[in-house]
Each structure stands twice: as structure tokens, then as C-alpha cells.
Amino acid sequence: MKVAIIEDEIAASENLKYLIHTIDSNIEILKVLDSVKSSVDYFSKPNEAELVFMDIHLADGISFEIFDQVSMNIPVIFTTAYDQYAIKAFKVNSIDYLLKPINEDELSDAIDKFKSTPKEKLQMNSQLEGMMQLLQTKSKSYKTTYLIHQRDELLPIKTDDIAYFYIETGIVKATTLLNKSYVIDKKLEDIESEIDPNTFHRVNRQFVINRNAITNIKFYFNGKLIINVNPPFSERIVASKAKASEIKNWMNS
Image (tube, rainbow, N blue to C red; front, side, top):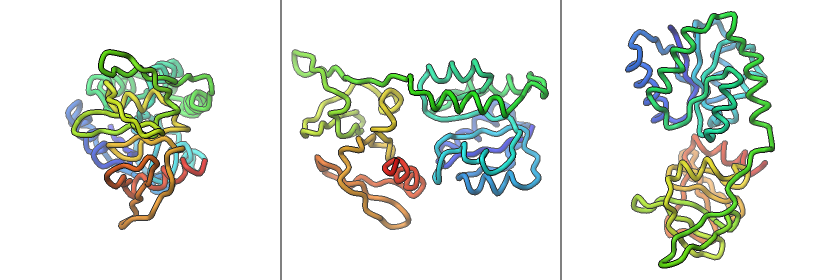
């Protein structure tokens, strides 16, 4: 079997390659693509890919833009960080969908499902339509309050009042717009999946930021960005070049 990977984070693509070869060393990885543009260029030409692993958020846009620019009837396994309920819904629509960080057993099940499904049933166009409808639905509810342990009491903190979530010395914390900080007993990945992506965005591995807390964004070397927030943080918040376009599109939406 020959596959292509569309993923803009090097660590994520390397991990996926490792897991794929661990599951089946005979799978040939033809190409790793990191953007909408490079993917359109690749799939505009004859290729041998039988299956594509595709992240939804890429350096220069959303991966669905690929389908607007090129005819692509290859089955896709989507990989990204949406919540468990979305995953179940996608699978009802016959789309394989893996939550990051990718679990080896789930990846193995997805590959087995692809291998065992007759080609005539792998109808990519109808699958894509179902997935796009699910992504565009506005029925999803997001977490509105965090109950914080503070000494001998529990404090309800409204999600919209939080300026940013961040990791500091291995501990996840939240700082409010009024500059009060609290420890959050959750992983940053879990927080990211349960808050409104229109309001909050993961700008790097350490920070998820409320758009209302961003005062300005400055250009940095090598295409990186410095994100300034209020309340100010003690260190620079730097976004990678790979994240820059995604962050600018989010802020401009």
C-alpha cells in the first residue's frame, strides 16, 4: 500500500511515519506535504497514492481548500485535535478520523478498515461532504466555566474571562483578563478541545490564547510571530513560521 501524508508539524509527521511502519513495514510513504499549495501541486499530477493521512489545519490554510482546487478521489484518514463526539459523528459518515496525539491501536484499526473496505465503497466525495457539514454545524457546545480549586473553596471562572491558558514548569495554568492566575488540573490538549476555537487558539506548544487578550502581533525573524497580550506575560510568546498563517487567518476571521 502506498500513502501520502499531509501534515505541517514535523514532529507529528515523523511520529505518524514511525507508527505506520510499526504497524506495517510494507506500507510505502510516497510523500510528506506540509501545506495546501504543495498538496495541490502534488495531486495535480499523476501519483500512486492509495490513501492519504491529512491534518485539517495546515500552515497556509484549511486542508479542505485542497479539494476546491484539485480533483482528488483518494480515501482520506483525517488527523487533528477535535473532540471525541466529533470523531464518533465522522465515523458514522464512514470517515476515519484520528485524534492527536495519535494512538497506535486506533491507527492500526483505521488502516485495517481501509484494507478491508471494497474500493467501490470508498466514496470520497460523499464522505467529504458529510465531514464538511459536520464541521460547519453550530450545534456544538463549548465549556463556559472552569471550577477552580483555591485553598478551601471552589471558584467558578468563566471561560470568556480567561486571557490565556499556558504550561509553566509542567503545570497548566490560566490567567484571567483581570490578571489573576489559577492552576488548571487538565492537559492543555484537553482544554483546547473543549473551548470555542473562534475565541481561543493554540499558538504554540505552551499557549492557548483568547483573541480578546491579544494587543498586537509583531513579525519576528524567519517568519515567526511575537504575540503580545494583556495582561502581559513575563516572557515572549513566539509562534513558529508554520503556525503564522493559521494565526493570522484566525485573527482575521
